[in-house]
Image (cartoon, rainbow, N blue to C red):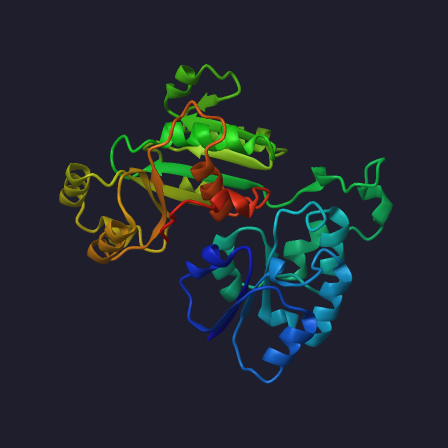
Amino acid sequence: MNVIVSNKYQTLLSNLNIDVIKNINGVFTVDDLAVQFKNFFFNKMILDITALDNYEDVNTIQKLSVALDMNKVILLLDDSPKVNSAVYLSQLVSMGIYNFTKNVDAITFLMDNPNTYKDVASFHQLNLNPEDNKLNDGRVDNNDFIGQRILGVKNVTPHAGATTLTYLLKRHLEALYKVKAVEIEKHDFMFFNDDTLDSVNSFEIQNYLNRNNDMEVLLVDIGENDVEQFCTDMIYLIEPGLVQLNRLVREDNRIFDTLKGKKIVLNRSVLSQNDVYDFEKESRSKVFYNLPNVDDKDDDIKEIKSLLLDLGFTRFNDDNKKGFSLFH
């Protein structure tokens, strides 16, 4: 059985399909965790790094490595510049901490396939001077980020809004991240009059991703193409109207078995919280996010920011979530 220690990523971690014997949420000192788990048997601990008090100080992680067996700990990193600096990551590796990731979906893989030094050697910079990673004003340079996010967006019901949602995600992300968006085998992006949006065919996608490996985030409207293997994360859009749902199930009565454990987003939804609970019960699925109709001309859509926050883009403040009913 496993343990989850969460804070900012509580919602994301709650969707993990793993056996959990203990789940705690909040901010804890290393001593707090040492007392709680010193004589507590567990297989793996999934530790949201934001649940550690003073986690940006690598000395805190060093203290943690003394208190706990880090071979049993999987660290979920956040997007803070300090944690993503070359210095910080290199020091993790120097301490023998190899199982860290920014991708929640990678956690279950790491549970059965823990990293070795070979897997993280590229982060280990033996001759790195900490001062080399700072700007002239002393701030940390975040150009050395790791873990590029490639987020795929796919319609499950026809015309569920993947193209518009990809555009809206890009427009909100670009204020805080280096981001590009691309559609595959379509030319619908032209109607947004945004020349930073790209269109490629399915044979070009791998080269496109390689050419843009300096981006922190790549958004991919994958259409009907079988390119999910290129994405680090996926969201699956369902427009929950009665006709659309009935058509979906008639065409594939095992569709929700296929979607089990995946991030289902109800898009352009008019469902209430109780409606969402009924939907989950009837479909035997879990809704990741219930997204209502939004004004695609608005440059500051709180529901879009809240969805991005739930997807792990933590540069968006938690205050963006206030005042909205989110169903998970």
